[in-house]
Image 1: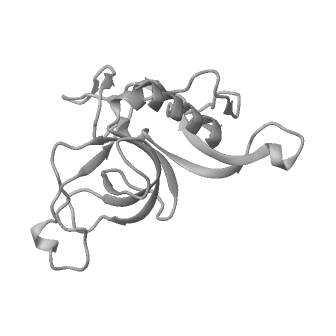
Image 2: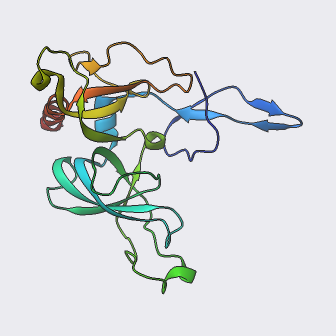
Length: 205
């Protein structure tokens, strides 16, 4: 299993053996594996969201503003929310998000308060869990089995199957594990199938 350095640890971690460099020891950690039901239970908010904008200039960490498209837990459709701290989410793109409510809000850095538009003081802030794996991109892809294009292509959700375990009833593609030394095993699951499972999880709460 590959271990990575330098990422903020937001949730439970599996700790690998310390690596020695000269006289210094560096503890290398990576996020624990979680199944999708456990992720649902741990999250304060579960929803399909659309990114409206982002701000990496005025706050100590990057903040995104998003709109809830479809809510499963802790939100309602049309609600606006703020989350962070990871980067590279696409403005206008949709994601399936499992987010945890932060214990503290976020204020603009004093030195930047007058430098252009920002969100102001954010009292209700959410955080992505498991070092970024709890937010999953939604795209139209053609990776599924079938003879016709209509069978091969569909809206789908990308999941790192190494970190987030799905039930066997939810088929993922490609079928073979990825040969990736980083520990990543990116799979696509049909959006309709995974969201139907989330509806069932929500009803069981």
